[in-house]
Amino acid sequence: MKSIALFAHYDRDGIIDDYVIYYLRGLERVADRILFVSDCELRIGEAAKLAGLAEFVSASRHGEYDFGSWKRGLRHLNYDLAGWDELILANDSCYAPVYPFEDAFERMSKVNCDFWGPTANEKKGEFDHISSYFIVFRRPILRDEDFLQFWSRIEPQSAVNDVIVRYEIGLSQLLVAKGYRYDSLMPPAEIGSFATTRYVHDILHAYKSCWLKVRVVRDNPTRVARLGEAVDKIHGLYPRELIDAHMTRMLGTIKPGHHFYSFGGNWQFKRYGLEISCHLKRGKPDKQINRRFDWIKLYTYVLGIPVFAFTWPVRRAYH
Image (cartoon, rainbow, N blue to C red; front, top):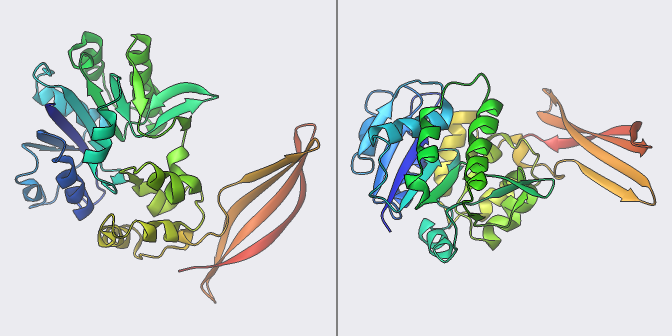
């Protein structure tokens, strides 16, 4: 199989971080060629890090997010993919490979599909889209005129959610509507499943997934429980020092407070017609003792209407 990879990059400081170089070195084991396009101006000397890794490097602010970067990679190829068996789209939003890319590609080589990715997202039990942080297209998609024209229509969007709806979801829906078959490395799941406690602790390892989302480690937006333990668990599979260095640059610490939550996300209890919902929110830092409160708010639902019951603070160590 002849594979070409387009890698989308962005960094607030114009740096190609070491975790990105590690990603590309893993990617070159499954791709014959790599094209690197950044949606930012790079600092002087940064592009030299890609010597021997990427045959094409483009770095300028275009404001079209990852899809704009991939568009520029395809434009460099004159939208001609006739000589390739696979097109890989990837970006720097993940620490990877946690498990080798070769294993994932070997498993998926036995699957009869036209495009695939690590996660197939469902909405109300119906297929919605393949996540675009890593997606592989096979023949005959690479020769499909609608697929190629899709990229020529990429333009700046006012918000990242517009990019997701128009391009990430839109591309999957376009291909499925044309009869192309999709599949995923992990079982289809509700949107956002890759950012949950169950994923980072269990599913990632059960399916030997190659990808751990940077946003989860950096921000923990879905409140993954014991996130620090999950990051520790991949040590030996992935160089932990790359994560630590990146977190230090982004956050100023390798042990942010959101790595130590005891509870995960929001949860609900339903029984005998009674629904209890627990919402956990960060409180304000207590500057005197360098701690942070998490406020647990408990609601009951009466005829679908939330009725506040009570709240109490849980003090969390701020590392």
